[in-house]
Length: 143
Image (tube, rainbow, N blue to C red):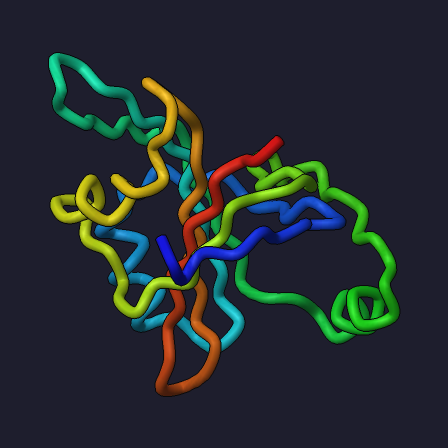
């Protein structure tokens, strides 16, 4: 957990709903245009000393328009569009940017250091930052 930091997300990140799995969204992120952004809301729990993960919902967006970028750059808040029903809410998070794009089968090992409670909620954010780089981030709500 030494790579994790506390992050305050001052505004929510809004997404169009998606029904795709983590592995499908990773594949889509790799091949998507720069600016593509996806998220998965997930829940972890321990059952009989085994960590299990349930994916609750997912969302995606195809980047920001130039007008939206200007609003963000000046510290403004983007209005939620009617079709954007998924979100990573504003708030404090334990945050880590991963060195890999995590396949669902290895995700329990990756999140284990962050599972301080018997169960909890977390978000996975995937985005295509540049032609050569796709990013994966973990966000665990913090008090």
